[in-house]
Image (cartoon, rainbow, N blue to C red; front, side, top):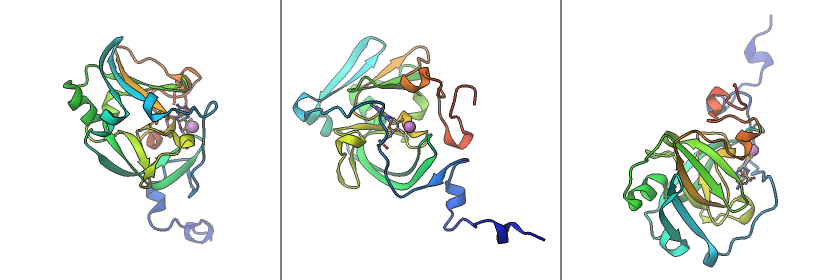
Amino acid sequence: MATRGFLGRRPTDGEGERLPPGQYRTDDFPVLSAGPTPRVALKDWSFTLKDGVRPVMRWDWDAFNQLPQSKLTRDIHCVTKWSKFNTAWSGVMIDDILAEAGIAAPSEFTLAHSYDGYSTNVPTDDLINGKAMVATHFDGKPIIADHGGPARLLVPHLYFWKSAKWVNGLQFTNRDEAGFWELRGYHMRGDPWREQRFTGD
Ligand SMILES: Nc1nc2c(c(=O)[nH]1)N[C@H]1C(S)=C(S)[C@@H](COP(=O)(O)O)O[C@H]1N2
Ligand SMILES: [Mo]
């Protein structure tokens, strides 16, 4: 008679409960980009918040870094099936960006835009109420360019393609508009716990 305990590797330290379906754990930090890493000098960097086509507010690097700073330590999950536990980030919560702009989220849908031309759509609910930030630091150091520095979106509870590297703005949209990978068959929300990898999952 075979028992699960005998044949299967029993997950240790709660790894089982922390790994979404189909994922494996790695301690590496792979780099995944659709194209070459853009180099953005801090003096040229800016972040723009838009409601549709209307700019609401724009920050340069110094102004952005004067916004309230927060820390998030979270597990991250890439759609290529690696997960990395306890990644430590700091930066500015989306809630604090909206507060500084003096607005409440004006629509259900958001597009994140990046310096490499990348974009990704995220339901606005997944960005607010303490869930997401524009991160500037990883492990206490400025994010290196390959991982999205100077600043990247961090939406740790969704697949990692939603965490746009080299982010330069958020745009609220009236309809759910597909971003780069979503136009190529990836899911409009991307919840790893529901295995929302592709359109129709
Ligand atoms: N601007 C931009 N952001 C991006 C990407 C990209 O190509 N361009 N790739 C996405 C994908 S598919 C993943 S899995 C993660 C990878 O982040 P990492 O390279 O820091 O691991 O970034 C996401 N953010
Ligand atoms: Mo990815």
